[in-house]
Image (tube, rainbow, N blue to C red; front, side):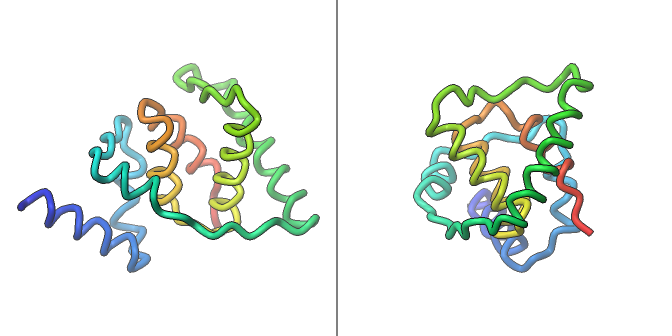
Length: 133
């Protein structure tokens, strides 16, 4: 019962746009893995994807190059296994949706952890790379 209440509170805060109180969860060094129930909810949720315009695509790619250049300076960063065209396309769309604010930071982390549950540090690294004005 207590877990259910916490999950409902977490979702309510995330949907209300209250990011300042949720930031400490995103910045955690060792984020918790979602439960099997949460993973099912995450993977069954479909987010709309708006294709980038040429201008947006160029700006997004510039930002991604900046984030990627910081990876080599971080000895704790372990690359995600994006070893198929499908995985690369999923990751590109996921990061674009975050950059374009089509999804929240929390949605990005949740969707990333659903596929790469042991890469919370790396997903948080990417989130921190997208500094929003």
